[in-house]
Every structure is written in structure tokens, then in C-alpha cells.
Image (cartoon, rainbow, N blue to C red; front, side, top):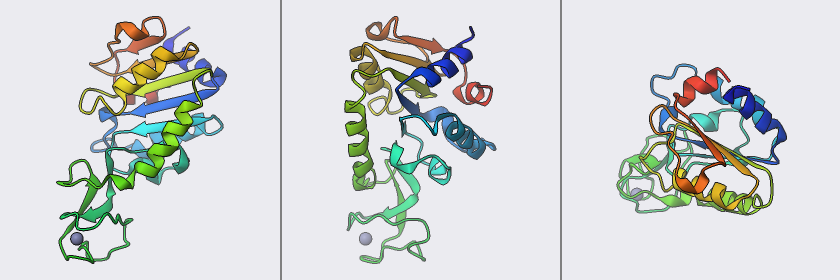
Length: 205
Ligand SMILES: [Zn+2]
């Protein structure tokens, strides 16, 4: 069986499906990114899944994927915040016409970790939903797919996913990354590393 067949079989058989999306999925120069998210939706929409993404371009939020089942802890550039952080308000695209803070008139900026003062309130409700969901995976058949997550912000997906897999006896992880597919001792036997670009891998899945 190829690793692709193993993953598709694992998706079929799992009770819980955790997906991490990282640097390889940044949408610049990926013309078919929306098609890839639609493909993901077709594959997983009937599963009990959760997606954690560190990508901040907001493309995933435009897809058909269920928004109550995703969290973007590094933010979303299409959501706007005050560049001076005078308020914790966050605005959706088009809500503020001139892209200027209605309170202090400073320019708005993307609500992402790149902002000088990142307002984390944008993702915290979904982070709570995620941790509650994760607590329910402990004794379940959990499949973890880690797609293109390197070492830019390893505390968000990479290291916590390793921990999640190491403590769940029924978990299995596939770590797919062109150059960082290595696995630590703690997950040996419960995880496979695939040294391939995860976008290309997913296109052909
Ligand atoms: Zn302001």
C-alpha cells in the first residue's frame, strides 16, 4: 500500500481527524489554493475534524470548509485591527470603508502576528473550541495530518501535535514536508514522515 492509500484509508477509519497546515500552504504563488481547500472539504466534510493553520492569508476562510472547525492562531490578514491597538475590536473585510480606526484614526492593519501589537482576541474563541475538541480525542482513533509545518512557529502546531500523538494510544500521524519531515523519538512507531512538498502531495492525493 502506498502512503497515499494509507492516509485515505486512515481518514476513512478514524473517529477524529486533526489537520495542521503550515508554511508550505502560504497562498502567494499557489494559483490552485482555493481548489485545494475545496478538495480538502470534499475529503473530510463528513468527519469529526479540526484544522489548525498558521497561514494568515485568510484563503481557508473563503472555502467551503466548516469555520466552526478551524482556528488560525497566527491571525488572518483580511481581518483588520487598529495598528496602534487602541481597541481590541477586530473588523471583517469591508466593515470599515477607509481602513482607518474609527476610534483613534490610526491606519488599520492585518490582524496577524506580523502586527506590532497583535490582538489575539480574533482567534481565542476558536482556540477554546479547539482545546475542547482536542480533549475529546484522547481515547479515540485519531488521525493527524500535518501538512507543510516547519519551524517558523513550532509551538502552534508541530510540537503540540507531537505531544498529542505521543499520549494517545490510538493516534497516528503523517508529517508531510519537503525538508522537515523528521520525527522525534516520542512518536516513533506512531507516525510517518513523508519528505515531499505537502501541497504537491495533497494535489495528488
Ligand atoms: Zn485605534
